[in-house]
Image (tube, rainbow, N blue to C red):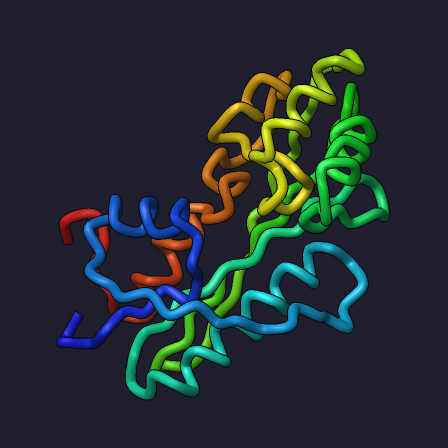
Length: 192
């Protein structure tokens, strides 16, 4: 790595855990942005927001390798952000019941070598849920801080019938993309 400092531009404990699992030494500095993108397609929104977060942190950490990520959940043309409250969370879960949706996770790496951004696209299919299951999950509070209103790595796993694509992309940090981009910027991963 040539002594370069790696900075994770995210306060997400899930992203921290996944990056640490790759054997990367890093520090955390959340971007704290008002998340807004002029892009329309959810895939491009995820890429744009990841770049915005990465650029914001890179300005404060010159010379570092900054990695940022953003997840957008899309049901058709509708983007499901983080729900505002339990009622909205229940509405999101009810909409997803028995249907397929896309989870787009953008990853951006910014370093003295330049900037790169890629997007992981995973299709998630919810099983048909009963009204009681919808209420149970919403009341758990687990989905309140997550795009789409659910977490696949927790209780939300009980809602899902199948996924097509990368599991870690749904968690919010697609490891295949993270590894590729970090290597491109000279960061050793996975024991290299």
